[in-house]
Image (tube, rainbow, N blue to C red; front, side, top):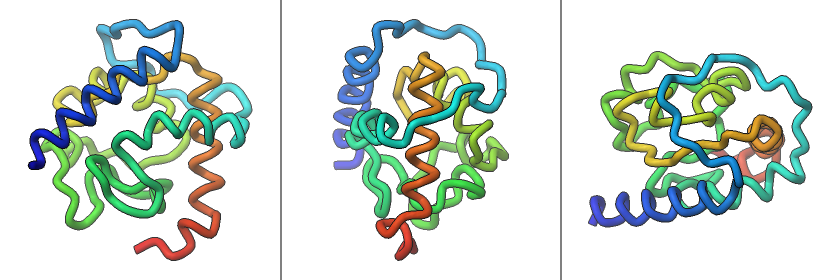
Length: 146
């Protein structure tokens, strides 16, 4: 069922978020929207992306939407994916700046999002993940994106 799948993803994502960083904290205000200030390393970013695999994949939708085609895409716009109203109404277009902002603390960045992930507080990890997503989007797995 969709609800239990979503809840499983929420639990796995929350666990991975806390296990993946020693700095996990609960944010109380939406993070500032700034571009990553560090140079990202796609190899490290691929390792960080393994945390995302609990809910996402590059080329197909899972509990979360696919990441191929992410850059330049309006948030909440993958056809056939059931987004939260908050995400659909966010008016975000994904780029390095908006991803850096959102990934800091998704639930405070877009209150009401269905993405129940605590976020990535480490700016270097965010920069690495964003660089990986950029390279993956230009790679062969995403070349056949729908």
